[in-house]
Image (cartoon, rainbow, N blue to C red):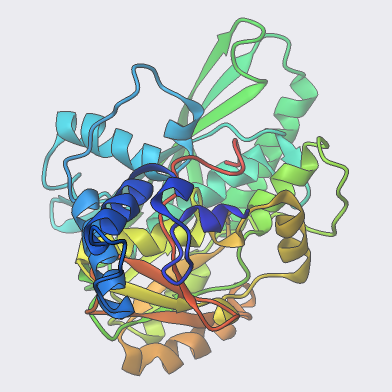
Length: 401
């Protein structure tokens, strides 16, 4: 079973007992209520499906609460456990209007200027992988969080947590990679910090970054601004980074010609915003992949999302490796791809602008926002059916960024 199929298919005949978590509870309740004492089905198929969707939506709207007594790896995956942790612990503790949108970067007013501020930490394993390493990953990831907020990235910080015994040659290699990535993105690393911990306490090297960018355009971007009818665009093939990391660990006897897609998106975003000033939202598809972003759109804007499996670009090598690993590329992290929401009438101009940049040559419209079934993401499968694309609890590929 692939990771994508942990979500409840809307057209299969599985029971609530076959499904995990609250989806299974909703299906079980649905089955109890739709069957009379003689075991006869009482409702037409369409009505039964709508009842299931309604119950799933109600379950999602419950106040988030961390049920575990201790932090687990799933809390850092970018999936459902991460969202619960953020909303129930961090957002509850630090709640304020600047934090509440939970976008990739906060938008601040400083004097007469609008700036974007973001922070991130990088704990990828292995540190060096085909197509990149932890150094350029840290720079590109921070640049991209600023870029999808509509900002021009300017300055970064870099904090290093180094493990006792970490080779100096490897540290030189990481910092040189960061220098080159910063130069390519047109940003400067202007401050930082270094800590050393005992051997066995840091897996070699962790990097924390923060970034500041200037928002010069008159734009207000956020997934909450998505509207029914809007087109959803992905800027290129998905899943490259996560699959590359998984194979680079050498734990599986799988060979594939795949490299990480880590890259700075600021040039791509500039071209898109020049062509379509009315872009509603952008997100870079990192932890949790495209599926997680689609769910964030549906939840924040109170809309439904319908995407087509046939329209989602996935490299043949990534699709093949994903099938062997039993995971769905829609949940696999990218580090050089964005998801954009634009008015449907601007979709053609948006695609043309993305195609004009080397990082967007395979950009595609993958679906649309709709008013029906708010809060629910559905995928039109290659076989002609539909299934729900839910948030995963954890991550099929740990430690990918």
